[in-house]
Length: 291
Image (cartoon, rainbow, N blue to C red; front, top):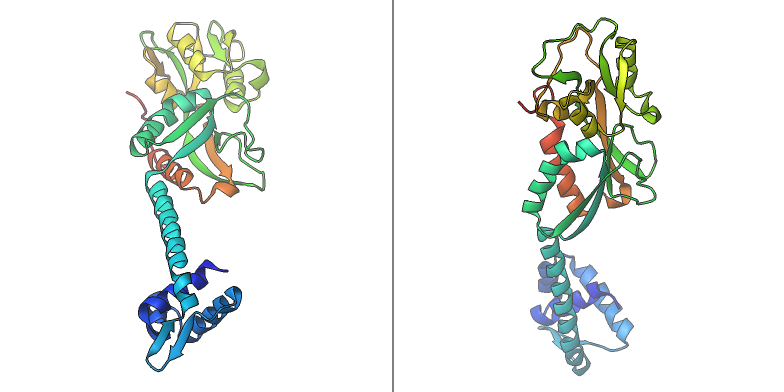
C-alpha cells in the first residue's frame, strides 16, 4: 500500500468526484482512477460506489477512512517536524583547520553562525595533521593543500598574504644576507614549506633562534623579541608589538581550500555554514587585517 494512493483515496472521499480530487492534488483524472483501482486491489475491497452523481464510500471504504486520516495526520506531523528542524537547524558539525586559521579566521564566523543557529554544535579541531574527509574524521576541512579525493567536494576559498615581521619599536633592520639577524621558522618536519624556503634563501646567514609548527607560537616569539618571523598577514597584523617589514621581495602567500564529503552536500546546516564562511572570508581583503 502506497501513501500516495491513500492521498488519492482521501481526496476522492472528500471531493466526491475524480475530477475535483484530481484538481485538488494536481494530477490527471485518469491517473487518479488508476491509483484508486490499485488501492482497492491492494486491500482487496471495493471502497467506493460509482454513481452518476459521484463516488460514495462503501461500508469497507468508510472503515478505511478513519485509518487513512490517522496516517495522513502522522505524515503531516512528520513533515512539520522536518520543516521545523530545517528552519532551526539542529545537530553537530566537526571542522578541522590549522591553529591560527581557526583562531583568527574561523572563530568570528563560527560565533556568528552560533548566534543564527543556536541548536547546532560546531566542533573545531586545530591540528597539524590532515583530517580525512573520506574516512569521515571531519565534516568540513580547511587546509592549504588542494583536495584530490573523488569523494570530496572542494573549492579555493581565499588567498592569504604573508609578510616578514619584527618588533614594532625597532628600526627596520639592515637584513643583507641575514648576518647578525635571528629568525623564527618552521620546525624541520615543515622546513620545505614555501615561506620557510623563502626565509632561508633571503637570509642564508641568519641564526635560527626558534622553530615551531605553530604559527601563533611563532607570532608570540616574534613579539617577545626572539627574532624575525614570516607570518600570515591576518595573524601578524593582529599581534601587538610587531610590524610587517617592507621588502622588495615579499614572502609567497598561500591559497586556502575548503572541502567536505559529497554525501553531506544536501545537509542544511553544512550548506548554511559554508555559505557564511564564503560570505565572510572569500572576498575579504587580507593585506590590511588588524590595525
